[in-house]
Image (tube, rainbow, N blue to C red; front, side, top):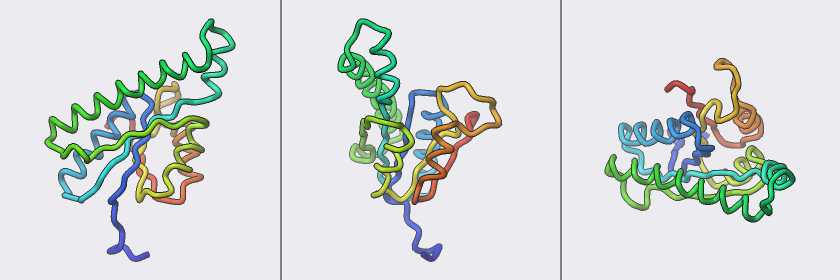
Length: 155
């Protein structure tokens, strides 16, 4: 592939609800607004099966009830992003959303097969030192077959 053939028509942005993950979305919007790419972005949120099972084991809720709470949370994340896109005058069909289930890194990489680029925060909700790349982000970088653009947490 030659550099002039590179197009970023379909961009995948995984979010976990952290400020850093929203910053990755807002960076992408700002970037696309500046360069005038004719791109579409998909925001995805992964509901971790292992976390749902752990919570179900210690709470009086079923796995389905816990998944429903996480789905509602993801929908609220998406609404925040849609509102920001509207403020920036992006067309309605500019953003698509997807909720995935399973191991976050594996599901994101598997889902990304029809995309040109993944934009992801260097670290998300889990507390790791500032200088480290988050576990999920690191795994995505290693497993991805497409370019991964990593956005620093304080961007």
